[in-house]
Amino acid sequence: MSYVIGVDSSTTATKAVVWNREGRAVADGRAEFSLALPRPGWHEQDAEDWWRSTAIAVRRALQSVDASDIEAIGVTHQRETFACLDENGRALRPAIVWMDVRATREVEQLGSDDVHRLTGKPADTTPALYKLLWLCEHEPETIRQTRWVVDVHAFLVNRLTGTWRTTTACADPLGLIDMDRRDWSDDLLARVELTRERVPRLFSPGDVVGELSVAASDELGLPAGLPVVGGAGDGQSAGLGANATRPGSAYLNLGTAVVAGTMSRRYAWNRAFRTLIGAVPGTYAMETLLQGGTYTVNWFLERIATLDARRLGLGLQDVDLLEAAAARLAPGAEGLLLVPYWASAQTPYWDPAARGVLFGLAGHHGKEHLFRALMEGIAFEQRLALEGMEQGLGRPLEVLLTTGGGSRSELWRQILADVTRKTVVACREVETTSLGAGIHAAAAVGWHGSLLEAAEAMTGTGARHVPNESAAARYDELFAIYREIYPRTASLHRALQRAFDD
Image (cartoon, rainbow, N blue to C red):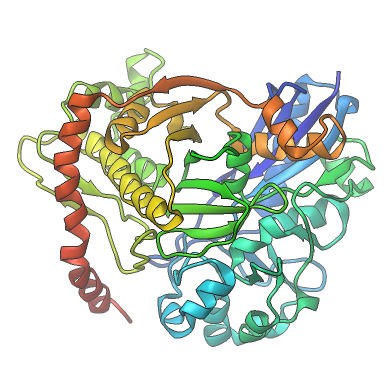
């Protein structure tokens, strides 16, 4: 038997999945870690948790397979999150997470069409670029003491191999890379008081970036010398794991954030999407982004719903009960619309001041209405984003390949099909982000002739949903209302933010 491991260090947990040559998961391990919110809009983490959780997740995955059968380990990660490290690789402050929105003024200061054209990223608080500028202004001593600024992938590669290396598809979301040259932008590095000597060396996704060190071998339980294969950010990796490599197909990752993307050989930039370096060398990924995906669902479950379904003894969770109740409602949740800007607005508005809206709330609405409105609101937002992407790229998208935890919901998949009027297909494997890292590892050790051949051989699909015309027509009517809510309230969102600015 021969296997590879795909490690996915996401926002609140690390998952390690052991994959066989057919792309089937044969073992897995998971370890969670915390997300701190020291102030409204701020999101931070202890960088050491990335490594601790990786070691735990890998050891748990190895409990049911022989470590000597593992041929390589691939890594994917939570993209824009970054850490400032000293010369010994220890964090000087908590890592700043991708969903952090503290750098709104820095976006206004540095964000421009020129930066957008250079990086592929519209002006927004998500890229690390603006948070590094915030550190220069508010924590200059941190920047002066920083030896390395690293993405999560680079942090883990260092712990695995002892080298400071990452890939273009992992570092690119930081917003510091020239997309045409696929290299660090010296100009942008200088604007945040850095040089290329203080950032990791860049490789292509799918390259072997080192070998597992003896120290890492002891912690993970894997053989020393094992090839460590560089991956891509979690969105691009999920696209590879979904095999969204054909024209007209897109991946739709219903994770902490909702990310939809399609692959292109040609570089393009547009406010309707953000452009990243693709998981396949020589490609770009054009993506739409909504930060409040299952993040918003979990917020609702933890802070509002609180059903405690476990006490029923039926083996159900709160989300199962809510979904069953929401499925009994007709499209539109009996007159309730929800705008899911719990973590600001990204495509197509890029407004860090935007916040969530419940529209039409009335006395007959209960938890099941809110839950359905939440799923429908994210679907409406996806339709808005996809229409902008299609217009910007000049070509239609026909099939959405769904991944991530939210993709397990049959109700949500059908709502997405009805709202977007597109075919929605569930990927065979839920952990497609980890599978993307596994595909990178498999291709690197020669299991298949190329990365695209590996993706074809190791992926598959499950349930297929086509639009229901009756529901789709109802959603067309509601979408016409939904798309007006943010534009008509945008100035009020900004006024509310100013009212609470320090």
